[in-house]
Amino acid sequence: MSHTSSLPAEPALHPDTLFDGVDLRRLAERIPTPFHAYSASAIRARIDGLQQALQGLDATLCYAVKANSNLAILQLMAKAGVGADIVSSGELWRALHAGIPAQRIVFSGVGKTAAEIAEALAAGIQRFNVESADELELLQQMAAELHVTAHAAVRINPDVDAQTHAKISTGKAENKFGVSIDEARRWFDQAARHPNVRLDGLHVHIGSQILSVEPFRLAFARVAAFWRELEDAGHAIASIDVGGGLGVRYRDGQVPIAPADYAAAIREALGAFKGRLLLEPGRYLVAEAGVLLTRVIRVKQGDRRRFLVLDAAMNDLLRPSLYEAWHDIVPLLDGPRPHCRYDVVGPVCETGDTFAVERELPELRSGDLVLIRTTGAYGASMASTYNSRPLAAEVLLERGRHAIVRRRQSLEDMVAGEQPASHWESA
Image (cartoon, one colour):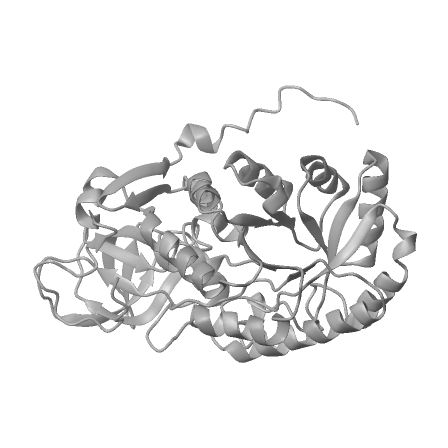
């Protein structure tokens, strides 16, 4: 797909019309908008590129399920030999049902409950990324009750600025994630207090949408120094999880880190490590493989602004409202039109339901088809039914064919768990 954001007059066949060999305009005639479309070929290409860059290292990719948790996407990961990085029992259920072996699943997150830990222990996942002393105690308790040994890594907070949006930075001292190296050192020194937890791993994840390799180099160097210190003190380290965070191109001027450069940073810091390396890519594998198809409802001319009202809304794609995130917006038109500026908005009753402000686009009319790029990550997975808007359909594309992998939610589906207050009980 092209990545130009300032569009010239459109040719007869818009260059963005074909996506993984599928004509999106024809697809939108068959499937009501808005809907998400994902390229299986693009996802596989990202997986292959990263795996090739890591050749020679004992490295396992564990896809960050939160980026896009559709079962068809997870099945694609499973077939490619990719594991899963999960943050809830729901994601554990999805990963297992998609065919990802428990031995390739790692469990991250600051708020694991006793029930979630028990489910993951029963499933036999590879390891837990532990983020607090309280969690470590709970993991010991649950493993002892189940008479099993839990494999665990301590998530280090290296106090590194990932140079990304504040809401997706996770590796600074003020963030809620991980523990300091000083605290982690105490955990290893007191390992005998947790006989049912084998603490033999390190984990670091400093944030998301990182476009410079330097924060990775700094974080990896600090983890490598700690690994060497632990080994010198007699603590065996079996795995080091370097997290995820690789950025993608959302707009012109953004240059993602090349897989080879990322792998070089890992080799530089951890090339001598004899254990297993784990990586948790999410956005990097799926973001640019996804688009959101939507149609213009109307153009509204205000006193100061011209509003382009789409049938997609913040409940379909939250990132612009939540992070002020940029997404390229591309009208799929048959011919040239003059350009003008729009605030591109959805129909949800919130001023924050805005995709773009003062965006230059061709002159558009009701019914015109519009593509929003780079929505394969944190699009459908963050969606809601706010304003009682049913969840949009999701469609997987592959070399000229398509399959609906989540049908559009019906109104009956949306309220399926709701019921009148006809049966009252006392607490």
